Length: 172
Image 1 (cartoon, rainbow, N blue to C red):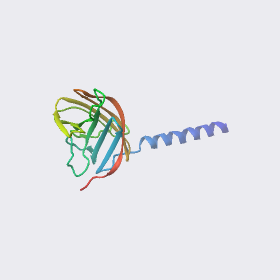
Image 2: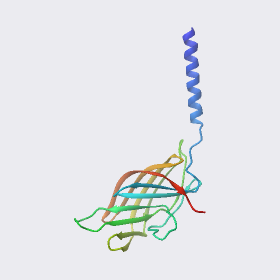
Image 3: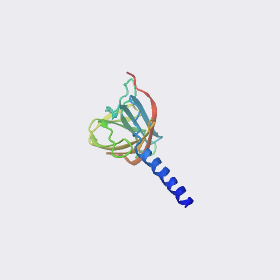
Image 4: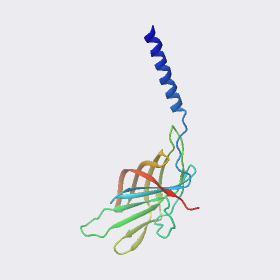
């Protein structure tokens, strides 16, 4: 009899812990912040937040005062000795949703104002029709994880995982 009361007490405590964990509010990103993810030699992603939104950003913000939402892909060389090329794409912005216990987003779009930059010669070419797919999950207030894929003529990035870490607060 005594073991039954201990078992019931243990089950009750377990159920109470599960119920309180399920009722815990979802973690939102920092309210006015920049998150940056980098896979050296392949791509980088920048996500600016404001409340429960990922802000829009233009491609190639070289003259911007701070980082803006977007991605940069290092294009694979088609021949040995070819100069490094970077494809800069913007991000149209999105609102975070909470389908479960975490805030998430998923955005697929066509970027018609991407910039292909040849690093050695500083030549810039506008590229249209670039297909971009980005997903994200707010893992903690200081981390957004997800996937990114970019398809452009001569510069494709197959689906890769990223970890965008909190970089700092956006200027007011």
